[in-house]
Amino acid sequence: MIGLAGATLVACAEKAIPERQILGADPARGLALIEAEGCGACHRVPGLKWPRGAVGGPLDGMSSQTMIAGRFPNRPDVLVAWLRDAPAMAPDTAMPASGLAEDQARDVAAYLYTLDAD
Image (cartoon, rainbow, N blue to C red; front, side, top):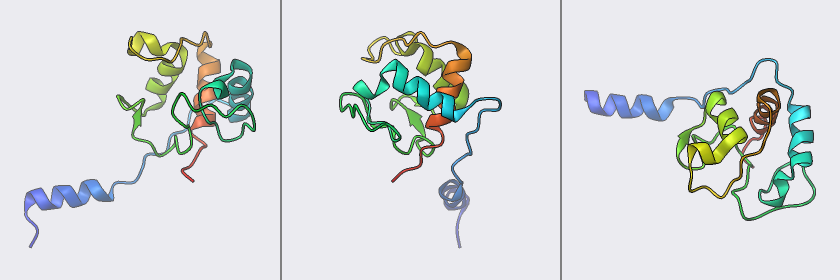
């Protein structure tokens, strides 16, 4: 017999990864912005052949990650804020503020949410 604590753990383990879609955002534009902004200089970004940076974390599997930069919940609103101005959220981060407009950051986030773990 499973007690209340055991049932809670089982329920947590069975939760599906939430689907992360951003209405009105365009993942294709997001990839183009990732390339134009030079995100690949620091990050390995699936969909970019070059550059393949290794300073920042790889962005494979972004759709299934639970945290952004190991600190923030992986939710669309949080990811958009992070993409626009990471230092405002974490002053000690090496990631610079991007200067992306809100709609551009939404497109980039939409692309990142298409990336499944390999």
